[in-house]
Image (cartoon, rainbow, N blue to C red; front, side):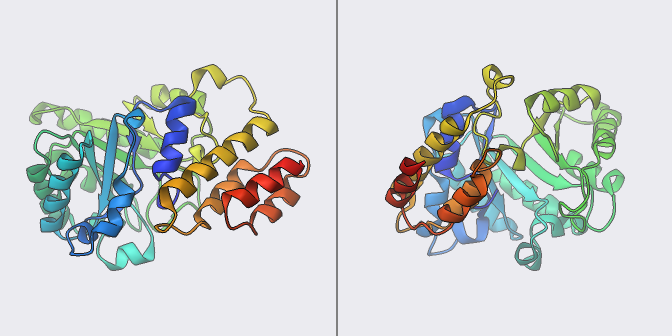
Length: 303
């Protein structure tokens, strides 16, 4: 997720109980292919503790995906994901993200160029049920014919954004479509579901119930680095521990991104970390005014 799953937060997630596979925030393939790509390289930093780690690119120019894929190899990523699901207007205006659902020929060309540049790295696609309506029966075969390592299906259309509950019955149709086509494919494409997963037990239940190969977590990880930690599933994380990790996260963000990212990015995390205990609202208000880690530490010491 843009301005959420950056290197600082991923390090925290890995430390407190990491997932089977980690994904970066999405990065512009066009930007990486441009002369000014250096400012984007900060978004491609990762720590060895995050492995296996997959880099996610977005864009609409096949030749730039080829260049981005070569860079992914050079930087040592474990896989490449192509974003074909983002509903953000600025992304759609470029013909990227979920707009590619309505442009299957371009989507296939992008996948082909990415695989060409990826070498032995596996390539996956994250997408949605459709743009304005569910077109999975037409759209998914296009992706499957490209013989991807994995397809992640978010259970909403682009038009629905996150305004309605994720449709897991529809996600299950993706598995049925894959299974029917399997005989004609060289490799079996892994199908992962995504949308409204509450906790690790919920993810495991959904994977079993809908016959999925796995589940991707997005917003559920926000403010909860312990999400994937099996040992913590039945133990509530207390206020003191949450605030301790909030400060650790803040210091790490400041160390990694000062001069590259606005400190206000951290305030999204404060809203997620600080809830569910007496005085949380008042504390959030104070944290919305801070400008650096020292100010955060000063406020937290008082409580």
